[in-house]
Length: 167
Image (cartoon, rainbow, N blue to C red; front, side, top):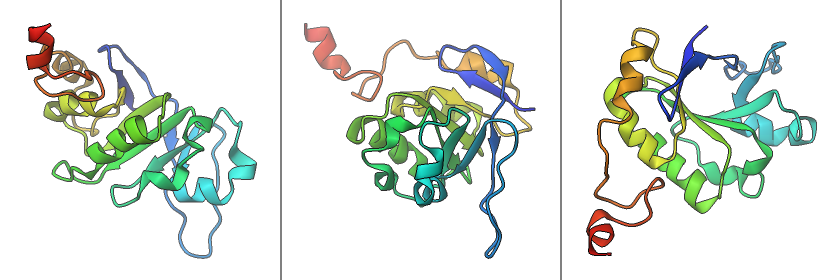
């Protein structure tokens, strides 16, 4: 079972399973434990899923989070997949979920998540991180607080540093 790193650096075992998109003609099978399903499939069957505490969604990097506009806070967990560490679209999805759509619950980064991305992911609104399987969670947890201040405004700091210093 993978480990999850919280924004504060604490680490715990992940109970959530990422359910892959079923092949054409197959139906979605939910496991007996908490499951993250593709966001568009959740939307298609939302009448079955709204209010269930053990079902969350995941976005692939090419999907638009606006498909869940007005419904995001019905979900306890939303995950964003990073298919490759160099694919930065997940950062934009996180900002859109937090700032434009007002998502307040758990937002996790999954997929090809590496140590040196965590600080940037945190600034974009992620509060949980599931590292790539070959990475050390304990070492990664220390990477979350390398910087005491960010220069730019972001989801974690609404005012840029130069304005904070001036006041």
